[in-house]
Image (cartoon, rainbow, N blue to C red; front, top):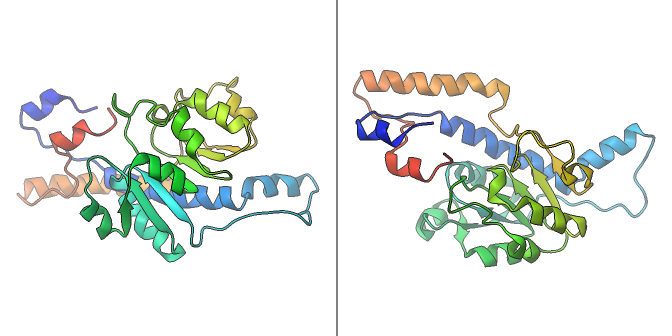
Length: 244
């Protein structure tokens, strides 16, 4: 973790955050498709001798409306990735203006509108005092029936106890890559819910992308030595809004 004192001493800080963000954005696509098409269920059912029933129901990603809670690095990679699916995108972020979002084809909305109007919601907020349990019982109750909630950000952004209670109604699905406590306890009620897809904090970067993260930092070290602009620099102001 980078300290405030480091910035006060004038040290320049770089990070492979962009490489991480792109990989996490890719994971959201995978998680979305898995949840919409019920891929885990049908894979497990087939291995137990099952087959689709006459009244099965699944969905696709094409032409969906997707809400992005937060519009930092990851959503800015995710938005272009969703373009081939013709998805309509809305986002909430207090620190990003409507004009910036519009450049990515995203409509800026308030948080309540996002939760009531988007059947798919993807969380991309850092863990800060401001965002702790931001997604609470009230917001969770606003999600449309058959809605999908994805969290690849930080577990504590969502009130996990309230989420468990909402999931027990079997009204929505959740795809969770992060949790309030990690590793997730064996006794966690989330492990017993069929409408919760659980991934052990693996959204990104995938193992094959780690070398690119290293290369990104090394390239900026070379840029610093050569007095060139730093591509992956993290400013003190930006660091304040990141998970710490």
